Length: 217
Image (cartoon, rainbow, N blue to C red; front, side, top):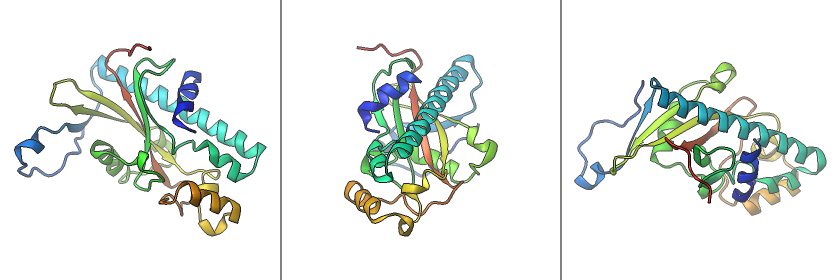
């Protein structure tokens, strides 16, 4: 799925993890600080609810579209959807006025556009220490980023687990057809997202949720 397609898809549809306390240069101290919060106030709970809803609808739609693509064509044709690689966009989204950015990221990326930023890395480190199978898959993580201008950025993360269909492109390269392997190499020359097994943790989907709705142009 390319970024432009995400708008269509979406319209259809306290523990702190900070680094060690080390002295930092003055300039570094001005950088945004990210913390995880357990939603307690009505406003925080609304942010989590809006994020959960957006991610759940997005994941369901992507799963259905991938199934349709695989059922109607070859695996290499389905690669053109790039359903997670292209999941990085910002701006107001039809049907989800509270969500102003969407991203998929992982410790094993396919392209540079999915590289985690420092705040994303904290979430990846967190989920890397907990199981994602069963009930844990429904667990979302709320993060507040305190910026120098005083306006916090709110993010909601959910883990993505590997399914049997994921393995077609993310499993053992030796199990892929020459045609599929060639296409993956051509599109993702620096691909790291290989060698997964069913049920393993793939990465996270993250949405950035505004404290107030964002107006569409």
